[in-house]
Image (cartoon, rainbow, N blue to C red; front, side):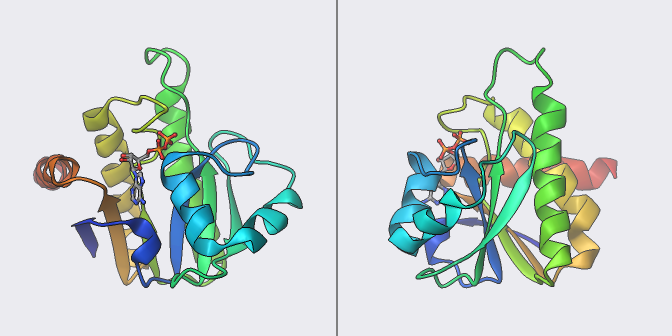
Length: 168
Ligand code: ADP
């Protein structure tokens, strides 16, 4: 089941939350900064051992002080106008995060809107990719949460999901 919520992802009690990280995996701003702040400094120590992460890939850590048991870190593409493999890379972020989740037996998972903040991906297009991949994996999870950070984003997600279900 896909749920669209407006929340701070660090508060969600799920098996895993996904982090929109950067290639260093050593923390940053936005949702990444919030996750590191809430998980505690041990997360950074753990991330130092992971040797970074390429755009489109996903790596798992414990959740440490978070209510979520695990964190799946993925690196979205920086929007450069659309002609630099942004769409396949963003699709890969969602797919690889789901594959890592399945590998570790995750049944409930929450995603932020990867790349749609500082990385500048147009919101509607990023929502279409996020929700299309969520629909592909819907049957394999108990809960898939699209965690938006504003009512406006949540509204956009709801209308995109509605139109994708109609065309399915
Ligand atoms: P990126 O660099 O991948 O664009 P950002 O963190 O800048 O990542 O933004 C990604 C999305 O996460 C944005 O839509 C932003 O509003 C949202 N966001 C920021 N903080 C949080 C949070 N604590 N919980 C959920 N979403 C958040």
